[in-house]
Image (cartoon, rainbow, N blue to C red; front, side, top):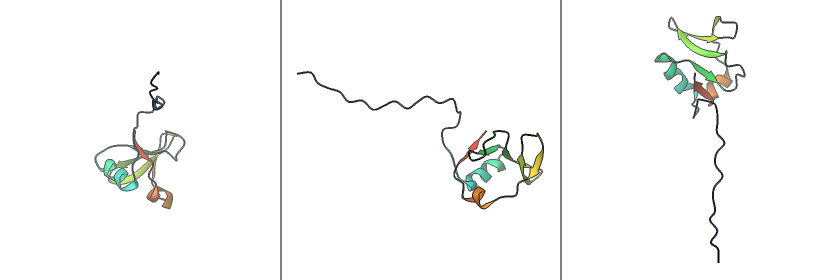
Length: 83
């Protein structure tokens, strides 16, 4: 009798460099140490948060920095990554 071995499906390879996401508080902690953070809900990777001169800014695809007006969605979001 042939013994069958079950196998689990392998995860699909990904080209994304992030492996996990984090919440807004963790995003702020990352900004404080000089990281740039992106929210996966923001479709364009040209959008990211940065701390510049002690003020939270949002970098937009036009290359300019704008004051980050934090929304409720930003506060409760759990889909931030470091870029």
